Length: 103
Image (cartoon, rainbow, N blue to C red; front, side, top):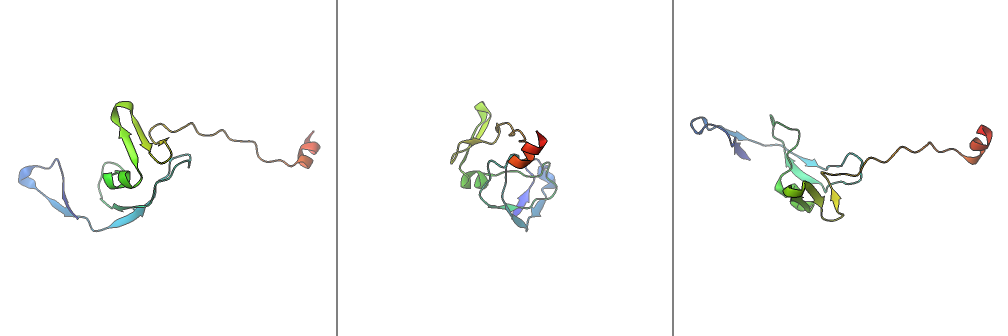
């Protein structure tokens, strides 16, 4: 894939060829949502780790509403920009016998 920087000077138009891709599957921090696997082009030197393009948004049926600051997966209504709070840690499992001994 041949690309050039969108902000490059028209006199110094540099074309770069991207030749590598990976299979990419994303998860939210709480593992409540995961994307479908998509092919992602490896682009060295970006200002961020991952840029999600239209193909990934389309295959995962993600709808962005800029005025409401939401990014919702249509299949299950999960809002990627406003995830629920992380679940509280539960006490470790203790058998009835262990509880009895502790009491």
